[in-house]
Length: 444
Image (cartoon, rainbow, N blue to C red; front, side):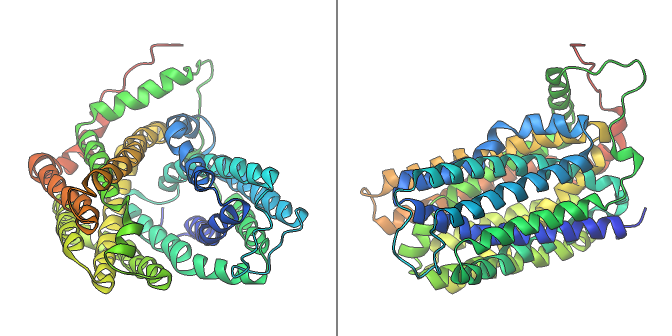
């Protein structure tokens, strides 16, 4: 099975196009929310609706990915996203409020409660479709790419997604808003539709489809989910990796929870400089995606993972003590490079170590731990600033989450990851994967 074949190219192209739409939506949806209402709580609910499915539906999505054809899940999810986004676009046109562009300040939609409700529900459903699509896609890739090429394939996929999502999508979204307020949503819907068509054209290997033997009774959903949780917990290396990821996400989110305020009040950025920070940071992500396979090939799994964690510690300290947005941008390039290298390595490891029939469920449990720590970290970061602001200066309070993140990350590295996330442990896990006990379902 080749690393880069027609099936893989279709998958990458579909993901690149849909991520272009995501980048457009990154600009268009917040703008739509701010035009529909000026109530900060209502605007915040849009963001909550977008992330809530990751907390509530990640585990069920894993069970579905192991029970249903993953290829069909991806097509269905992209189709649903296309239809939902198209409905939002027509709703804007139907409201008679197709604004001429982002410089239009008249809040003509301020009292349009129906449109706000539609946006809220659409965002929730789009987030739901994203959970099912991403879980299925991550479990689908190993069926079209040989195991020895997974790091390379994942790296190129991450690079393509970051270029579309962070480099091309947001500027395109701004241009489309200038032409007509509904236009970005029509384009976004079109990207999802094209992605659905491209995924449909992928020739699916037989092993990508779930098979139930004749006369075999399928276990209940609860039994399937329990099996996935038990498998991950009994696999020592992946369990250690999941624990490390969860704590890392908590600590990095704790530092980034007040990132906007840090940029405005400590780095003194304006809106243009803040946008440049995001775009420059994407450079590191793209480079990381392309070279991750070579890096791990030269250093090995263990040294690469520990080097990434060390980089997070150093970056957090430098970021906390820095007052220049240019220096901050360079630090973000390195941080995003490290993040993508970590993701490419760990995703490829999971795709290699987890049996195909369990891949959806175990991946969902793994990601549940990782994503579940993100809101906890955000809350802690906000509380640190809130309680410190007063006893210390506002600027010092905004720096504290970064220092705290650095110190706790160093403890995680030295006290836990240093002896557990090693190349020897990863190689032993590969050799022992077939021997990892798979618990029998307790329910028929």
